[in-house]
Image 1 (cartoon, protein in one colour):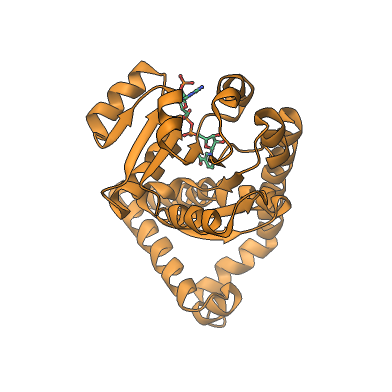
Image 2 (image 1 turned 60 degrees about the vertical axis):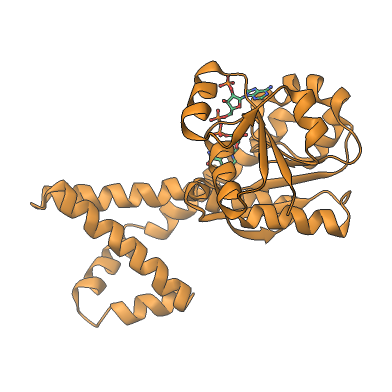
Length: 267
Ligand SMILES: NC(=O)c1ccc[n+]([C@@H]2O[C@H](COP(=O)([O-])OP(=O)(O)OC[C@H]3O[C@@H](n4cnc5c(N)ncnc54)[C@H](OP(=O)(O)O)[C@@H]3O)[C@@H](O)[C@H]2O)c1
């Protein structure tokens, strides 16, 4: 793996990824550029393995650099970054909605990787779509993948697929949390205390996820839980009657459309 890795922007995602990198390989030097004073204090207190420094210094020391600022910062950042980039730098951008072409154009740089991780990166359980620009060598490609695998599972995909991945797994945790909250609220209304209702829901989600890893066919898994005329079947019938699948499809479609619109706004 790389001996030093740079971060431009060290907010939620930067910190989550750096934490996993550091725990995967403790001798990796993690160098970060982060202008926000509160955030710098947070890094000193919570991520002492991170060295904060100026952009030019970080780029002199790192070949692999994660771009982890908010997407609307890309224009401002590129004015500062472009003159400092050298052809060997590999930029790994996680900026939602910012296409490889836009990055290439703004930065006049060709070793670009666009990734779409999700917040479970914080616990090393991300699902990350990875789209390579074509400017990387085989060695750079495998080092980038090794870096990304420190925070979870990766899927190499096209840029078009990355928009779908943004909806399904980038935004996806929030959709599962919404389902979890609705189940907890129901449990509480029916008399469970909040802690017990929350535990029941978390353990059910976790157990169901493990069952799906064992046999990744949700329809077969449903069949195994739902006995004829039983409680599960009654609930599933209500889901069908209330068009649950249509609600989920509409939810994901809205997230996907927003991902596409964002890439047009920033292009
Ligand atoms: N959260 C997710 O689930 C998720 C999933 C996939 C991808 N992403 C992407 O990950 C990126 C980071 O998201 P986040 O939630 O970690 O954002 P965040 O918490 O706002 O972190 C971004 C950090 O970068 C700093 N920054 C701004 N301009 C900078 C510059 N020129 N140089 C260095 N640092 C700069 C910001 O400081 P200021 O606050 O002072 O601006 C902030 O501390 C976004 O592009 C987002 O689209 C997020």
